[in-house]
Image (cartoon, rainbow, N blue to C red; front, side):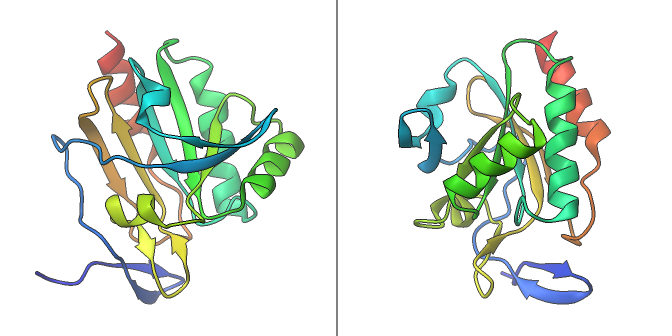
Length: 173
């Protein structure tokens, strides 16, 4: 098995975990989210019956991650009601909540993998030396089957949004 990598400004960084593919079952996860009542754990059970866009970013407090999150926030409004966007990063839940409040991104949910890096490892996006997540997008249907995968090879670049949105619209029909 070859080592999986990603680039950050051209520097090659190793990734931990498998490369997921279309047709795979979306791995379980437990993430931390800040809500009105404080911190809480979220899992796939919180998305029963939903099609989920998993938007994975290194840190919301960077320009590329900010643009990605705002783009999905703007797009989800025009998507069917059974579509959720979950942005996952290693940012602390408090920083994620602050970001959403400051940027007005209330159509997407955010959740943190900072405690265990379980999500990053299961989805093959953990950059262990930096303890960050690589940029990626997964579309998971209501049966938890992965219907689209995009690992962005250079994490300082945006994902290609159009194929993500096309798959989600196709699933809704």
